[in-house]
Image (cartoon, rainbow, N blue to C red; front, side):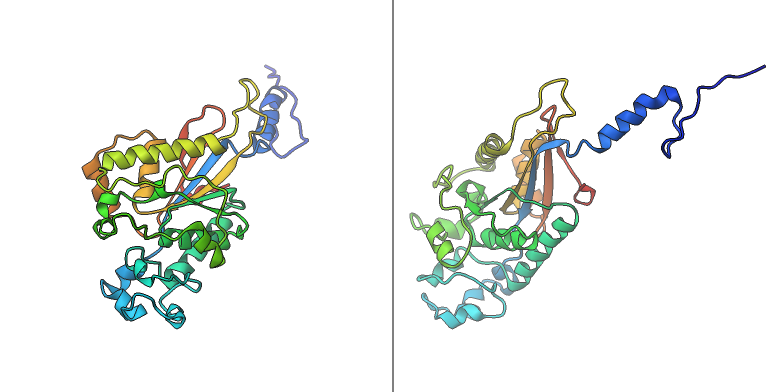
Length: 301
């Protein structure tokens, strides 16, 4: 008995039969298709805080306990290399910076992201807390994306009810203004319109979820792009990568919102207590079905 087979094509290394030519062409198209997402969010917690390293008396140890510290105090080896000088240095008690080691680790995290394939950051948002802004600046430096301006967004700050000392200031803001950051040499977006400058000191974790959802939806509207028409999946969609730097609650709350995970305020608070410094979450939105998914950091392409 004779068995007839379709002729074998030897024009590549896959040795497809003629009836499989379609799959060969499909594979080639799939490999050249590029990213399948239209919006990528890289969300980090800030680096280590100087007050958690030295304890409650850190300000006395570093700045000598005076309300207006001299310039040489800013050269302390535990402080970041370019910590902005403030007229009222005492405000750093309520808005503590990261350590110099934390600054170095933030730079290394940026280099790590670059090695894993994050070749470009298109936009950057940060909590106005100096520990977040300093972290964002160092991460951008590590990715070699210094020209990207940082947008200060108060709605990225942690639940205010978790920060009892901050509530003592009443109407005085402990955060530096855009102008103060720029005078210190930091690249801050002076044209960015903040979602809100008011934070409710009595807000609950549920209230924090709601304002975080507002931030998330705002970023989607600004940078989400346009999905390709149905039947044109092979057409490349415009994609944006956004760096977001906040607090321990930030990566976790954005993950809950994007993936529509059940939110339990008590469990959420407990989980935030286990988030390490520089904890990173990567969320990507599919360009076709607009569904969000979480990508492991080691699987960048």
